[in-house]
Image (cartoon, rainbow, N blue to C red; front, side, top):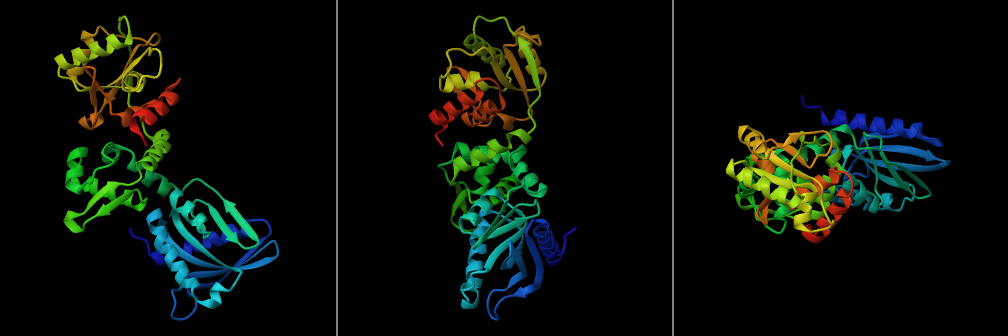
Length: 365
């Protein structure tokens, strides 16, 4: 069911008004709703008269449903157009405020840099008036949190993984879908979401349009922030009689190859092969595609299920997409550096130190 945009805007403005009235030493009243501003100029959605600690201000409200960094440029242009009228520009008590259902963290940062006020339905507030300053930072609304979380899981995560691995390359939708092992529709949806965050640059038009990741570091940082909300794969813990970790990795490779099992070493053991950091690693973690062949390979290792003394952990892979961009290093298949980096941050011990080292030495952004 699609909600009437005007009803949504009114509800947001009313919520904003209620929040202002709850603050100490703040009085607020709705002066006008819809088409506020000088005739012939860009109109505002509402005007609120507010008194903060005895000082009066006029808030000119622009209401939106959701705002991402890409949208901020348009919002700023609209505000400047509105403020171009001298009757508004010369008023020291005039404050422009963006009210929205959701405003992404990046968009909030841009608005603060431009000294433009904002409010979202999660309760965040920024009001940079001359002589008064209000700032409340709350977690993003559930709608935004859910939308962002969905970008970093499932098939869409495979698109992001592809763009990070090939961050210097230009992609059309079809080519990106093939590389990421997803449908063109999924690739297109993921690209649209990334554009809203201003993480992509583009060239060409229509069917020939191509995109390239402009901010790989920002995208990877955003992925890291979502790790706690992403469901971890199921784990199985084993002990395998082996002299050392390196020989165990080689043995895993041999039995998986003989049984035609797709696998990828990850966590500390993979990071150690990519960019040595520790003197030794005591445990091997390995993604493996579940099935009869995998069970046969584990059986050939003589792996024994244990709760203590674990030196082999199997992470159950759900699809071939879990092995995107794996690399063969010294005869063993390792998960991609991006995947290993993310896995390390979910681990324990010195995982974060190894992750930082891998990012600096191998990933590079």
